[in-house]
Length: 141
Image 1 (cartoon, one colour):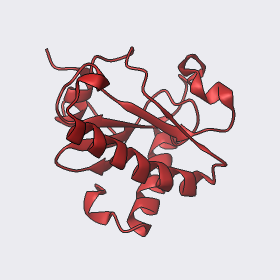
Image 2 (cartoon, one colour):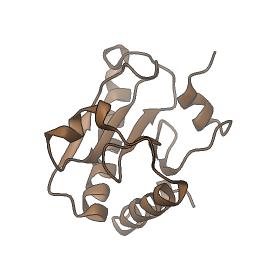
Image 3 (tube, helix red, strand yellow):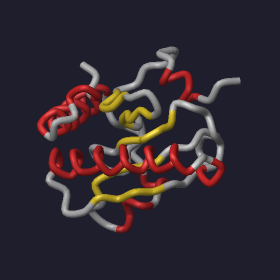
Image 4 (cartoon, helix red, strand yellow):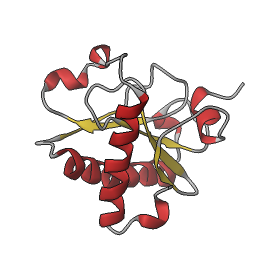
């Protein structure tokens, strides 16, 4: 059975994408620890990050860094957090988020009451920053 992330990637479930390329996508999580919390996910289903081939993991890290720079700009974040937890969904994903404090690294502090309008606005801020950084070809409309 496909993971929930594969279903989002394939359009079977909705997702607020900020990045799409042939190997990876990035979309906002519906339970962010801070506004601008993005998940960077390989298109290929792999359960554990250490099982990814080096080239695929390098690409995922590269996308996470590019998206992270855009999120930092869009949300005027003092620092950016990056977390590979791997317990929530059996499909590798990297959490990229504005790190306002150490509490942001605790996924148990994620908000469950974020509105669709808030997520849409956050996604558009990130898309705008990515386009401004020259990555428009990877930014979906």
